[in-house]
Structures are given as structure tokens and as C-alpha cells.
Image (tube, rainbow, N blue to C red; front, side, top):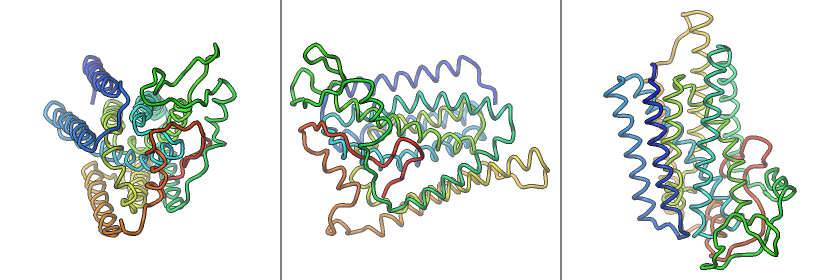
Length: 357
């Protein structure tokens, strides 16, 4: 499928407008209500689905099916990433009124990183067909890591590479900002003539460092669905755009999705095998089977439905048993007094993230 330049330009422009709306909406610090989070989550889902319908109408069923399958995979991985964000926001004690600002910077950073990785991935795939096998093996390893790290405790972030590097390069002003302060929510400050960054900047830095590893996980997964750069980019973009609102919508349910890691591990392993079979089918022998896109979409939908229903059913009535790991970590962020302490997350800054407990 060849996409004209003007379509690329219009799509990137439309996504830029959506990001600008998100930035405008988050311009003033405030605690995001459940109603607000629901409204924006629905808007972004409707926009993503409408884009897929437009693909079906103007470009055919095959590109649309690939887009929907890719969007579902990226959306599912994004939901799993919210567990990590909840721990980071909690352990860095980010006040509720500033959480959406930190998440918004994370979304913008993720969009930029994934656009870069998509360009690199598309170029590498076009030059080296064997990269399908490399991507496939990487996804199998990632699936194994998801299962192995299930129920593992959160890691302390005080010695994170991103934190150490930031503290080494710039001054960190640990002073807290009171609500209503002119400097409230700023990422940088000048105190006593000395320029520096705030603890909120440290939290954003950690979110961005985690985004980098998430991109390394998600790009091979989406290339396992489609090798068209336009579909890869749009599926990623529309999956990420509603992430900020989705966090506030699902934060109370994250601990109940106890089997999500298993479902994602199965999906990633399935896509990994699909990539390896694609290489064998196209470059070794047509006798090797090729997994059709409609089957990939069906496997993704059924797997997500099963793990979601099973998770919610198994945790029904669990509220009486006290908060789960994510809820406990997130409770530290409910206090509207900002903290200068820099501590933990589930990512050590040097490798793949330790996924949610």
C-alpha cells in the first residue's frame, strides 16, 4: 500500500492538533475527575475507530484490519505500561494536580521516540529480511520476561540511570511548591540566581526513560502485524494519544487486571512466531504457513477478552482485602504536598522494564 505524501502530511497534522488540544487541556494544574477521564477516553477511542473506518472505506479491508490489529496490540501494551506509570507517580509522590502534566510529557516523548524507531525499523526491514527472525525472537524473549516478572515487587528508582545522570548534569531544587504558588508545577526554576530543575522534572525524566524501553518492546510487535510504515505509525499514535486520560480512568482498576501480563505474553509470543513464519514463508519456502491478518486480529481480541473477564472475575470483592501493590504505590501521590524525594519505579533504566506486580 503506497500512501501519498499529502495523506502523510494531513495525518501528522491531525495528530499534532490532537496533541495540541491535550497540551491546552492540561495547561492548568488540576486533579482529573473520573467524569473528565471518561469523556476524553471515549473521544480518543472514537477518533481511533473512525480513522480505522476511514481506512476501510478509502484503502480497503486489508489495511484497515492490519490497523485495528496493530492498534489493539499497542493499546493493550499501553494499558500494561500504566502499571509502571502508577508506581512511578506514587513513589515520586507526584501530586494529583500535576500527574496529568507528567503523563502528557510522557505521551509526547513516546510519540517522538516511536516515530524515530518506526523509521529505523522500516529501513532495516527493507534492507534485511532476516530482521523478521530477530524481531520474532525478541518478542518471544519479551513474552518470557512478562511471565517471569509477574508478581515481582517494584524496584527502587533512587539509583536509576536517568536520575543519576540528571542530578550529575543539572542542579535539582528540592524545594516544594505550594498550590497557588507562581512556580507551582514548573519543571525548571531559578533560585538565588542559580538555574535548576524541580523534582517534577526528575519524574518526567524517569517516565521518558521508561518510554524508551517501551518503544523497544512495542515496535517489533506492531511490525509483526503490518510492515507498512503508515499503519505502524498511526496505530501507535492513536494508541498513545488517549493514554493520559486512560490512566485516570483505569487507575482504580489496574490491580484487578491480574492476568493481563499473561495475555500480553501470549499475544507477543504469537506475533513472534508469526514473524518467524513470515520470513520462512517468503525467503525459505512457500511450504511454511503464513498467518493471515484476520487470524491475528481474532487471536488478539479473544485473548484480551478472556484475560479481562478472568481477571475481573477472580478479583471480585477483593476490596475488603486492602489495597494492591499499585494502589499502595499510588496512594503516596494522593497528598497535594509535593515531595522532593526521588525514589523508585519498576524500571532500572538499563534494560527492559519489570512489568506490573
